[in-house]
Length: 164
Image 1 (cartoon, rainbow, N blue to C red):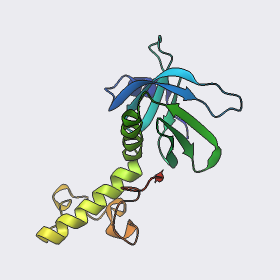
Image 2: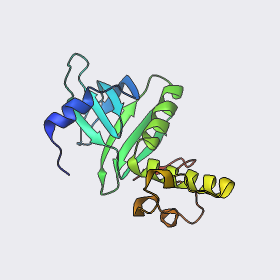
Image 3: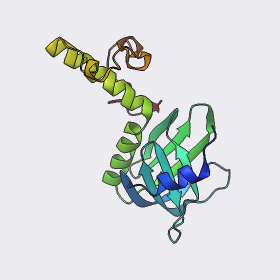
């Protein structure tokens, strides 16, 4: 997927849902753990050298897996390329938990599935479609049939989630 560099830079300057200095190791063999300022903005994870204003890189949080590795570390891997895995080390177990939960919720697909699930719940309770007032209730991306069989958004409580 291609992105406009100026748009990504503008997005990286937006307020972050989360930001912290974490240890980060890239996917290359022999890569070492380096301190990086990591910012979660919408469904992008930007990472910076601690003393620089522009990001070194960005990871799109779609079709990826967030996995707790140890009490204070987690990894981010991609479905299409399982060998491409980034490792992160946090200062505490609590910080690690906060990051893994935030990253799991950050994907467009998670938000879409959550919307569909809660739309269904509201319809059951009220008998009305809450999206009808916006004129988008018939769009395919909001159809109830696109949820898993149990009707719950994927990955709400699982230890290992596919985002998107």
